[in-house]
Image (cartoon, rainbow, N blue to C red; front, side, top):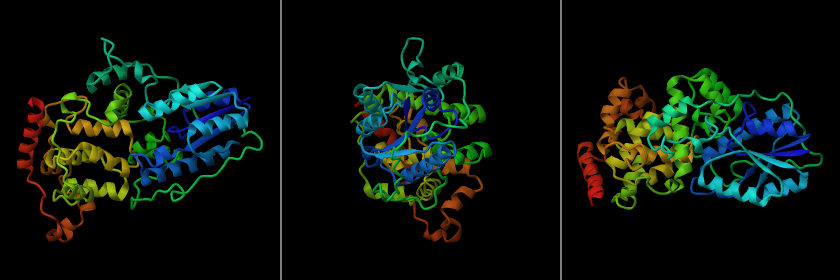
Length: 419
């Protein structure tokens, strides 16, 4: 029997339920990754993140070869490519890790309906196996984090698996294909010095040393969220829960991918379309050191600390009054860990239009006070905005007055709320 393992955001060998099931039932195994131009060149296209993905796949291929297998690579619509591989290999089943985005669910439903062999969905993309089943006592999905966290923390966890030492070979005469380059895919690297390099081995090293970002490795499944939960601090565990929380929000509210969760703010806030100010924000030239440091770190490394993400998000949506979707798109273009559910959830959260609501005033962050609180010695800012210490006269003046912008933001939301 031949089993096909369709890999997407589960690029690892450790604790991989779909891999475990596929290898146990098969004499031959086909681990396949399919490059889909709808994602590569869609609204969340990203050269930096795709380069990270290519590194993840190269690392995975090497690990598969060490175990007697190798990665099969295809490019095209998975609906066609997976069906073609099933016929070519006489596969008797397809195994995959379930995902929650609107695109993924539509695609996977179509494949399940079209294929003539069983398609088995497995957990492994999130800490909790069944996000859909996490409900309030009245049976509704959660829209506030803290009660979700309490329920999430008490749920049983599935057994965790190690990595297999040996894997079934590919079927004879199957052309595995080869990994493309970023240029082959029609994309370019826009990040100067990526904070992380892709792959399960790099991810496991980051998990062990405790100082490197884990989010890019979690996004592509180089790390098992289930295993990660067991090995991290309580603070990081809470971040894993936020990841599951925003995933279940998008699962139940797919329209959030394009519009505000809070109906009162849909199409009612008069966002500014200030392109020059948006460009200054993107380039880290706003005149606010913490905002600029965060945005320059994003351009240089393809990553940013969560606190800085909140500060720059508040500045864009509240101080500049620019549509949160502009910021969401820029982050998805530049971030190595750009994740639709998490990014969308965080942007709606800081823009005060999403789930887990608080009064607007509580999510207007003063960038100068945030700097004093979180970078009191200025080391973070000096690293990314060197002209502040080298030639401060070259540093731009603030493009807005925060106190004035705060009053305008409160008026803007109040007008929509009561308008």
